[in-house]
Image (cartoon, rainbow, N blue to C red; front, side, top):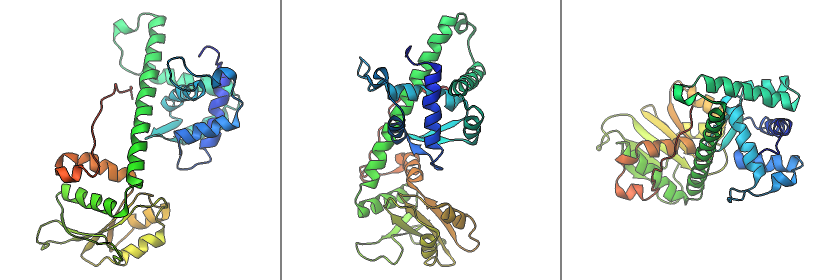
Length: 301
């Protein structure tokens, strides 16, 4: 990456930040990189491919540089979703010069790195420091890209699942969490309830758990949530599962309910629960979304 100057890196990062700052909830890394590639003039060197088949240099150059901004606290990466923090917005405003912007990210990166535990034998030469830095970044990128790819596959799998298969997956998860699933709605109109569950097999102990399941891309609005709340009785609790998530108003409405308790479960939370309770699922349930752990060398946090 010798042909990439600090000024050029700063230019790419500042433009990337401008793109990401327009998305309050962040943007998928691949989408952000594609948008950035369309806004800047890519040099022949950046457009070239790595000899080892690592893909276009441009993408890795930008990803490599974002390691500094992440450690600086300016950028948060979660399952391939990149989001600018308030500190990142402030830095973008304060450091208008691209080179100064990147230098500050590097300074904060080194400040973070110096705070990490280090054996005396590992801190003897600048060349070793440089090698450590390259290895750390390579490990970080490998982990981030693997996490991004894995989550993308899970996301596609769940969002493309047939609606009633998805409904049965949610029911299987509840059973794995030790709830007794008494009823699953058949195809057709369900009256706002897709699954009925209890904490005991006979349903003699409250509360009764009413679950609505939606496999859709759109977020559920506060009006959609209120429609579900209307089917909950005094002794009911509600679980609303939606792959597209919920609007901020809907989440606030759920948090501030005084008489009805409802839990909102988006795609990320559903997957977390599936992983957490995977060992408690029976073989039939696991086949609905089979998982296998793969271990990577973890980057330093």
